Length: 273
Image: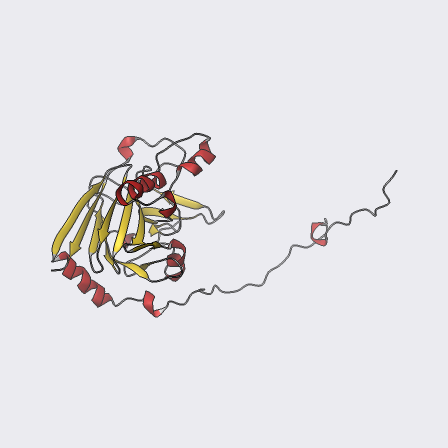
């Protein structure tokens, strides 16, 4: 029996003769005014940096290539992370040392500051706490700025590389990512779990979004032996750092990364006298 339903009417925007839709033009508006707590006193933090660096070096450790390590800091301590052999990026997690439920919130840090952190920006904790965990106080690569493709350093855009996404891309199982390295370090060294590992601060990593498709891109890190960053702890911290198995991130995720593309990172913690 033939259907008596009337023929479907094309939506007005699907018709051959429909006109392209036009949109009003607006100037961009910054969504989040900077709260007072996000604006630091530069002389105060320059002095905190000086007091720590002229105090005592209380800890030195090397994060081996393709691995992760953890360490602790007291409020006021300064941490320096150095590219001590060859170009290398790192992925960092932060927790309140006394309450690991309070941890770094990359998304809110991005909203309050920028996609890529610069000196005197702060790293913020998750809800419901929302307070500064650390303050970025020196960058030997600060002059890189924003390049012709919109690339910049030290992003809070991307997540850590992980073996789950690797399998989605390649169809292969693997254990060898920033996520798995961070998980191993926090489980073995601090008694935490995989669920405690969270989105990261990507240090020394050059990233941005393509202008045509808005896809996340990476460029080889401009960091060279001797480059470093300093940050000051604003609370007692547990910190974890992975020396990324992508090395300088010059090779696309999913492709094999030669071992000689990967290097360790050096960590030093200073405390004022």
